[in-house]
Length: 268
Image: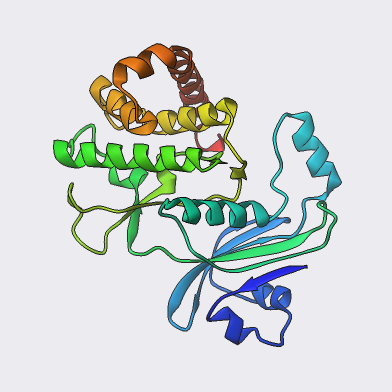
């Protein structure tokens, strides 16, 4: 069994079964499945997000593997990703409680509790009407630079997100958002993978997802080149030469994802 607790849970759950205590937490439920529960709760006046994993069973594991999907087996994936991102200096959530018991991956019980990031707005919501009402050019460039910087740092730290969409970048709004003074945090890492070094396959999947999620916000070709330069940290001419296959695949994969979204909508 693994159990790591910080305040206030270290004090509140002292001498108690943390797995029973976390199941008793109540609040606004965002996701309720047989094997996973996500909710927002308040403890001593502060907001926290709780993710509880109860084991998906061997049938679900095999079904995922047979369809070339990597199953999420527990909260450990998010815990490890958060640790790696903090070490690399990538702004993200802060975990204050983590527990895992059971060696059988099919019925393992685990949880992670993170501090709420508030007040914030997702980049998806912030950029929702950019086509009709473009943002100030300096602000748009600053946001592109920061998303590129964070995504590059995440990948160089050996973490691939697997849900790398602009909705999972939160813009902090505790003070006026300005081009020279803004903060983003990357969230929702329950599917993330952590390796000594990211492979091109998973790097490209993240980049394609990010590109797809930004297709409707009115980015120009110059904006896209700006992102590439900030992500790769190389001269643009070298990027366009060395990464030509990637750039072609990004366009193709993003187009397929977009077409699927148009067909299936939110079911995607």
